[in-house]
Length: 328
Image 1 (tube, rainbow, N blue to C red):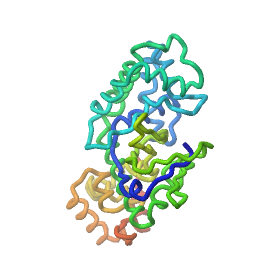
Image 2: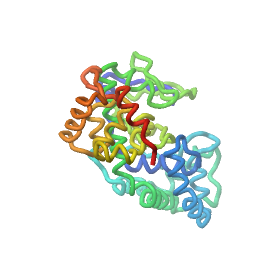
Image 3: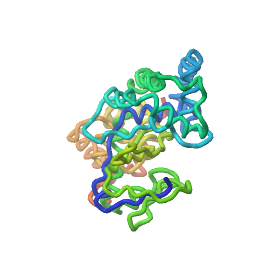
Image 4: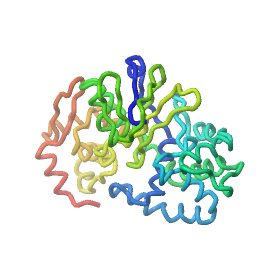
């Protein structure tokens, strides 16, 4: 679907949600690609790629199912692999995964035929298709995602805050245009979601959800057949936010300012709001506010208003202090 036609009510009702399953699926795509987009992703791959490959080597049927479901030739994911989030409440990973496990083998085979671009080979036309894929996703979650889920969630929530800020300042064009390559708001109820040449698709009256994920491989759209009442756009979090959360705090700076305050100063290489800093650091709003006041009084940071938000950023003095420290 290259172009979605969206009514004003559908757009106004669009909202951002957190999905642990989408994050895990994006990690599956990253493991399959085996190439990180930045040092943080590469370090994660270095830690987990070997175990992932060993697991698939011991289960060649699941390996072939994943290869088919990712649609290498058609560039189309099997729909059961990227189910749209229910859009209700804050679901756990296992609650989301339960929806995938309920997909029938017949539906999974039909989805695989689309992602493959040809009939499903006999060895993959099995009754346990969705169970095998769900078991692999559960392993990826347990072994590689869940241990860092709180950090990932903070980055995701910070991105959501940033998008809402863009929306309040510049409307949907500002919030949507840089979400993912090939996507931009064209105006007049038209959203280009990719560069593929497909007929326009009218989603007026449906629920529209936006799901940020931390891997750069998190780029897909999804909807629920046959009802088509819920459409999802999965996109990678803003690069600066992901990088900020991965930036180490120099030991000398920690001793000088304290761990929490030094962490705030390091994060402010990118202008951030108080709300974003709360999401990224996991500290309370009052604590972040006190750190910002001390850093501002010391002329290590400055602030400027952007629409309804106040953004904080390092001054030249703050940059010099951070850059003078040896990295761990």
